Amino acid sequence: MKTGPASHPKLAVREASKVYRTASGDLVALDRCSIDIQANQIVSIVGPSGCGKTTLLWSMSGLHRLSSGEIRLDGKVITGPHPDIGLVFQEANLLPWRNLDANIAFPFEIKSTRPDRAWIDHLLQRVGLAGFGGKFPRELSGGMQQRASIVRALSLKPSVLLMDEPFGALDSFTREEMNRLVEEIWLDRPTTIVFITHSIEEAIFLSDRVIVMSARPGRVAKEYEVLFARPRSLEIMATKEVFDLQNAIKLDIVGGRTSQKQAPLRSAVAGS
Image (cartoon, rainbow, N blue to C red):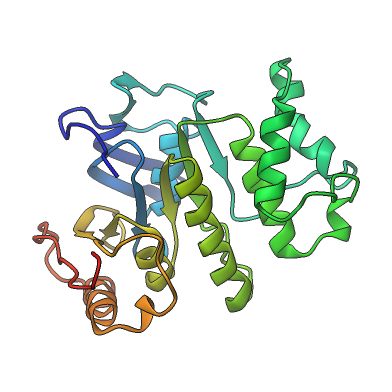
């Protein structure tokens, strides 16, 4: 997938720092993070709990204001929620008193715009929710609710989709199914995706690049390219190349090794 010139990233994080003022003193969540994310890449961010992954993602969305530094979308500084950025949360956050169709329509009601019904119907078909428009959240499984939240985010046709560990509460089988679904949707309509996860395996399966953050204060510690061919199969995840990459990332997180960027670890899988 061609991503465009490296000098013009889709998302540019520059020296991003975030300090929370608390009664017991300042808490530095992010410390001078800089990342370039090219158009139509899937980039996962991993790191130990409390390292600032979600803070960074929410800053990209415009929902959190940085203490210093900046984040640019297509060269323009993000100063608040942006119509070209979609966000999928850890929980589906569907309104329980609205059925599925009404939940998906809700962002359009807020914006006073007309939804593209053909596009929404395509997405519902794509994620296996066609015919469920009249169902309420309580009538849907956890996986179905998360599919609905993805449809809701993509229904606005954002050029950037931010995903904050959206499958962490799902069982392993459903989680694998959702990972394949995200890749299939991306192959169908490439979008820039930033994906927060605690699962290294999930990050490798989905991503073109994996960013490893250090323990708090969160800094960019390492970066890995993932060069396996797409579409990716579960068989690839059992190869030595994936095991070596997974182990290297795990050592970075658990071992707290040097924060300097390492040369990309390239994969030697047939077709990659």
